[in-house]
Image (cartoon, rainbow, N blue to C red; front, side):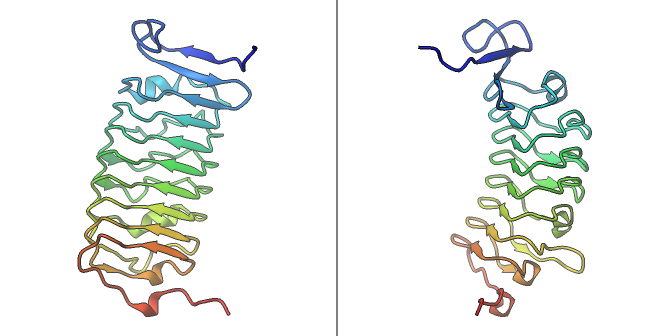
Length: 219
């Protein structure tokens, strides 16, 4: 039986995929999908230079990437899905994802992220879902939402956050779902998110919030 062809874009020469190569991409023709999960990759820049410009979905999970240099994505402006989960990221630099103007989903789950620069998400004007669960975030600046004008879902569960507020210049008017379970939340100002429809706060000790901040019930 003839099956859909699976092409391998080979990057180095010495141990993966059962073909004797150190690292490789699986490219699914006609889909724009590139997979390089669990390939022991540490240097993001060298790898990205080998990826076709027309890639729309990129999975680089389960590697050893610890930094995303600004400008890394300059030739991948068509990316809509990016999975960087289960890497070694600890800090997101300003402009880390600049150039990904049509990205819709960004998965940063299960890294070691403890700090996010206020401009880390600059340029993500079409991002709808941001997954930051299972990291080491103790604080998060609400200003980051200013870079995400159409964001709908943010997952911050399983971090060490104690509060979430927006001050005078943060928050989101489009966020509909916010996951915060398994943190150390004691205070959250829901007026920062007037479109919010669902929030999870289970497994947070002593958390509290003002009911007057909840969005009004339709009708």
